[in-house]
Amino acid sequence: MLATLTDWRDRLLGRGAASITVPVMDGALKPNRALDEAVVVAELPGLDDLATDGRRLLASAGTTVWELHGGGPRELRRFDAAITAIALSARGRVAVALAGQRVLVLDSAGAERARLDTLGAERLHAVNALAFDGEDALLLTDGSLRFAPAQWCHDLMTEGHSGRVARWRFANAHVTLLARAQRHAFGVLAQGDAVLHSESWRHRVMRTDASGTRTLLAELPGYPSRMSAAGDGGFWLTCFVCRTQLVEFVLREPAYRRRMVAEIDPRYWIAPALSSGQSFLEPLQGAGVKSMGVLKPWAPPRSYGLVLKVSADGRIERSLHSLVDGRHHGITAVAEVEGALYAASKGSGRLLKVASP
Image 1 (cartoon, rainbow, N blue to C red):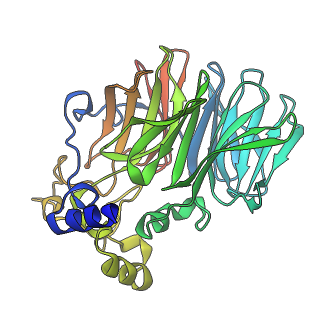
Image 2 (cartoon, rainbow, N blue to C red):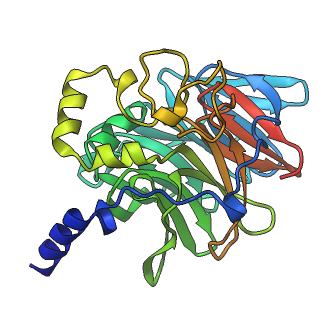
Image 3 (cartoon, rainbow, N blue to C red):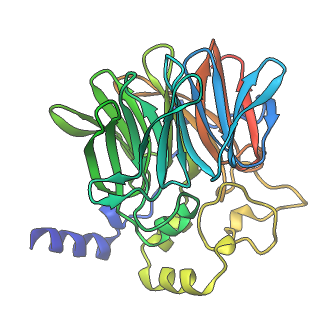
């Protein structure tokens, strides 16, 4: 009863969950052009995820896993379905999620060693992130039980809350469900005895260990996604799209959203995107209108590029940006390799290298 009254009060006054405010990017989040000024290592249409063991770097694009060398990408393996997540262990084991519906573990020679397609009684549906936890266990996020990984915007606009986080000990085929009813689980990382996992639509990163689950990062200005370990013991976090007041307003208008989802082409929804500026039919806010052919870099972002460096105790230490008028939006993965930071811009299909992470 109290929760119902609190919810009604928040809706009446525009407070709490009913607020449409978005955190300001300042301090460690102060905008810069680090991602736009990064070196373009390769152009891979369909680029999505990255994996590293600290020395090797793998990238997934479409149905192919590429290995990055000094001379450019080399095709490592091609599969029969789109790759929705990859991971690499210290001993060279490779894990891949195919079409979001099955996960394979391959040994260093490429032979299949284990396969997973269910979590309990329910089949995998939208596996979008993988991370090894030692050599015999794999962490995974299954973003939604209703929509495929590519339909993440449908999950956002329908207030999806069916995401799951799990640990799969493939050596003995044991699966442990770490979290359920997540508002789009997207990103997971082992940190000592704990597991970090992103909950995109709640704009937060959670930490789960033997004592339970707590919030590590909250009220982020973007929708958090995949993570990777940093050399100093912290981690890198990608925000694959950013929040705006207009989208926050639409998310609080259920009747409007239902009509929009039912009647409008998804490309033109009032919703975030991995890239923008390709069509005059795209929705925009007044501040996003070009003036004398110029789009202001501080305009409300329909698409954006954002990577956060987070300390082990959950403090945002710095950030890397591709501003609204930039080229490298939709950062879906990041990996630190031998003193350099690599980022996957899914919006542009480019693999980026930041020399001094």
